[in-house]
Amino acid sequence: MAKTTQDPRDLSAERFLRLVQGKRRGTLKVYLGLAAGVGKTYRMLQEAHDLHQHGVDVLLGYIETHQRAGTVAQLHDVPLLPRKQLFYKGKALEEMDLEAIVQRRPQVVVVDELAHTNVPGSRHEKRWQDVEYMVQQGISVITAVNVQHLESLHDQVLHITGTDVTERIPDRLLKHADEVVNVDLTVGELRTRLEEGLIYHAAKVPTALNGFFRAENLLQLRRLAVREVAQLLGQQVATDAGGAPAVAAPRRTDDRLLACINSNERAAREIIRKTSRLADQLGAAVWYVLYVQTARETADRIGLATQRHLLKNLQLATELGAQILRVKNNDVVDAIRQVAQEKNATLLICGITGEKGLWEQVSRRSVTHDLLRAVARTSPTLDVYLVTY
Image (cartoon, rainbow, N blue to C red; front, side, top):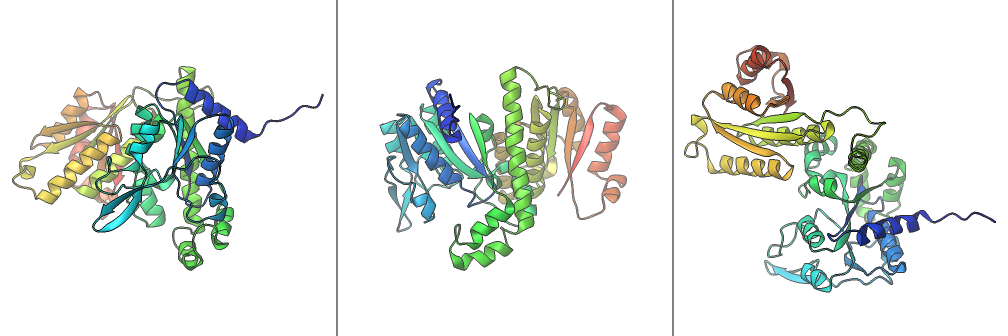
C-alpha cells in the first residue's frame, strides 16, 4: 500500500488546534518576519483557512492586505470582521473592533500588524495590548510582526538600517507565546519581490531598494529573526524537558545581572535593552536596573523633560522584565557596590560614552574608573560589562 504524506500546513493547523483545545487561556501564535513582504499575512490567512476546514470558529479580526493581489485573494470563506470607525482630530480612522471580537468570542482570531499604535480613545494604546487582553479572555490569537519591532533590538536595528522604529512591542510577548514561526525568505528573493512591485507601489521601490531594503540590511535583519526564533525554541525545549537540552551550551541559570543607569536618556535606554538581551542569552534567574540619585539629581534640580525620560526608561525596564531599584546616595560607586553585594549580582552592566577612547575613560579618574577599581578590589567574583553609547 502506498504511503501518503500529509501537507505541512495541515500538520501546522492540527498542532495549533491541539493547543487551542488544551488550554482555558487563549493560545498565542506569532509569525515573525525579517521585513515587510516576506509573506506573514499570507501565511496567517492560509492557516485561518486550514483551521476553518477543521471546523474551528475562526474570525479575521484585522487584516492589512496592502492591496497585494495574492493576499487579497485569500480573503474568502473565513469571516472577516468589519473595522470600527473612530474620529480623531476631525478625521475618520479605522481600527480593529476589540469589543465586537470579545462579544462574539471566536475560538481563534487573526490579527495583523501587532506593533500598531491604536487611535487615541481606543481601549488600549497599542494593538499588542489588545492581543494580550483577548488571550486573557480565553480567545486564541494568530498574529504577525517584523523583528525590527522588538523593543530590545531597537538600538541594533537603528545601527543596521538607520531607521528609528517607533512602533515596538515588549519582548515578553514572544517569550510568552505558545508558538513563534519564522517566515523566512532569502535576501535575493525578497528584493526580487520588491522590484516586481509585490510589496510597495512602483514609485516607492527605488527608495526602498537603496534604503531599508539594501541587501546588507536585510541580511542582518534575517540573522536577527533566525536567532530570535532559535533562542525562543531553545528555551521552550528546555522548559518542556524540565532542564537544558542536551545539545545546548551550558546555561548558568544562577546569573544575576545588575544594570546601572543615570538620567542620561539615550545611555539608559541602550543599557536597559542590552541587559535584557544578555539576561535572555544567559538564562539569568533575575536582572535589576539600578538608578542612584545624587543630590544633583533631586526633583527640584533636574528639568521636567529629564524626569520624564528617566521615568520612561524605568517603565521600559519593567516592560522588559527587570526589577527596579532606586537608591539615594552621593557616592555612586559605593551605592552600586553595596547593591551588587546585597543582590548577589554576578554581572554588572555599565555605560561608557563612545566619544572618547575607551582606554582614556577607564584609565582616568571617573565614575567608571572608580567603579572598576572598587569591583576589582572588593568583588573578585563580579564581572563587569561595558556598553558604549
